[in-house]
Image (cartoon, rainbow, N blue to C red; front, side, top):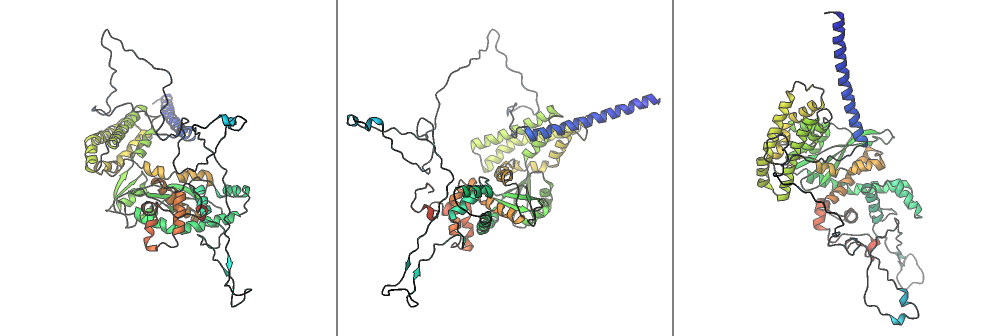
Length: 525
């Protein structure tokens, strides 16, 4: 071969390699731009209907108008009357429940105040509502405890000592904080993500002097009281037939020395809408084994992380189901390189979700839901995986192509992705647990990290209870105040009754409250 030809071939190979590298770098740049500046929503318009058409068929041609006729498109402009819900209290559209405190202000028109006031009479009342807000306020409870002595003695003596009234019981011994203040700190920090240093600033502006150490210790001691309840909730979650599990990172210092290491919260979502955030310093399979042990036997729903598959393979009593949304994301990552093929895959997955929407509309359950999935969803799943195998045989599909990785991802997990077809209780994805764990990443943006691993465990305890309250439509403020007042007298053998799900059935009608609300109609009932 002449040297010039060999040099040209070498340059051609080098050019092809450089083009491939450039394409990969462009894909990575697009990925970073999307995650930094792009929309986080994964919703897309569905272009194909769920009709009895062959999978991956070309789009149907539009229907033409009959000869001699034309199609007229009309548009109606103008403002339609605004429809308001039935619970609006007036024309302004303001809505509020009976729990909201209302301050009534009586207005007197000038006509009823002047010299001619007797010329007017009141024949009715018009009511206007406006939303108002008070700055975050604090209150000091001053307990006046009478000191008494037995009558018949002019002065106190050893035989007739004064008898001071005992101090009212408090959640934390020798603490200056009322239960309402403790609960307010927990709710502000873990539900609304307001760090303690900002709460301390608010206290100072209100004229109350408390050190941040006092606040930190009060939070720690309060969460320690709630720990048995979170453990009881974990035991309930592990009894589920369907368990969803995920993991999300958090920075924590092992010894509180300021050197942050990557730790992980592992949320577990049970089939009774209960969630528990367990903490581990690593992302290894050991934490899954430690948490589930021999207590769980059922279906484990997870994302594509291999640690779950490794654990399930070693346990015959557990069925593994995978998430279709995570599979869908692998195809989205390949959209730039293979737009047409990815469009076909996404449309098929969208068709599966349309069937799930119809199941929800018809409120199908049990065997009826299983039959519907086998009749309508299973053919789509079968053809989807056949299409994946066909795509892998394309001669132009190189191993570094993102579509190759997406196809390999779903094919390796085909068995787990099919589990939802046979089990009507298994959802198609883990979206419900991803929604439930949002307080963790939202909190990271405010309090950034946990000072110690023990602090991370405390975050998991309180978030387990607050998030479960939200899932069961319970006011966390009311719930936490009640259980903190009740926990000292409640039998330890019945701690399960204090978990949010059981508490709602037993104690939600008449919750215990702080003395702060003894004579005030605050709307908590």
